[in-house]
Figure 1: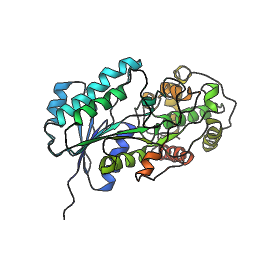
Figure 2 (figure 1 turned 90 degrees about the vertical axis):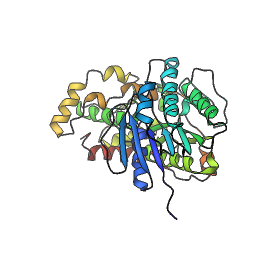
Figure 3 (figure 1 turned 120 degrees about the vertical axis):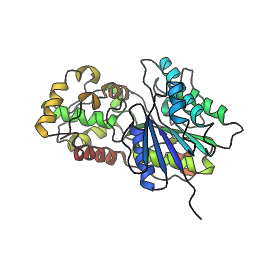
Amino acid sequence: MMAKRRVAVVVGARGVIGGNLIDHLEATGEWEIIGLSRRGGPDTGRVRHIAVDLLDQRDAAEKLGELRDVTHIFYAAYQDRPSWGELVAPNVAMLVNTVNALEPVAAGLEHISLMQGYKVYGAHLGPFKTPARESDPPHMPPEFNVDQQQFLEGRQRGKSWTWSAIRPSVVCGFALGNPMNLALVIAVYATMSKELGVPLRFPGKPGAYTSLIEMTDAGLLAEATVWAATTPECANQAFNINNGDLFRWDEMLPKIADFFDLDVAPPLPMSMDVVMADKEPVWNDLVAKHGLAPTPYSDVSSWAFGDFVFGWDYDVIADGSKARRLGFHRHVETEQMFLDIFRDLRARKVIP
């Protein structure tokens, strides 16, 4: 018998999550893939890119209304805003416009996957109940992740398609021009430290240096996302997805420093967004001196996100055992993940 045709729409195709998800789908050889983003991209192999403004209902309807063969929607788009409350309207609107454009025309739609995160548990607000579990109650709104899930739950009632909500920790993988890429923040920060002849220092809050934290490898996340979307037992459920190990920065930072041939000095709380704001000339000199890929400083400097993560002076961990109980058993060693990403950045000539 012929394999069933699967057509995936990846929303947020140029981000660290969406990009790695497309790579995984393509590597399986089992999917036709359509990537949606504001910038679009070059078509390659099984992947077709569409540039679309999902905040524009008309543009979404025009660009997506012809995608009648879609079987799976993988939603990983995100719009940043200055406050938690301001995040709600655009991020809910993008999801609603996507579903409104695709669901009525995609008669064979099987699944909608929603990418969330530990914000569902209030991880961004302060110390929260850990390890967080998928069954934990929601916190006081506003919270766009919860609103998005409620929209999907309501839309799915009585329909043949199903949904899943995927909740990773901090996602690490290769992507440029992304506002939330911690591995790149660390790599560029360490590279700058070496160039300026200063030791590597933890820049976050004192308590963050010794608190427990976990990461989610982008490749592992892609595999888990597709697993949840294609496993019937996972229908209409949420899943925490993490590497499976915990660490503290006071142990991890020396290992990172060793990779970059740097000494480690005691932590010094400082805003990376402030102290790195004047470093564009240093970056441009590094690119020229080492013959690096001509990458703009704005594409490698997610300093505000670094401040955000390094400011967690409390444990940020969730229970990932639900996915394992239902059959997803892959795990990643976080130290090795960081080193592999740094090697990849070197191979791509993003860092020297």
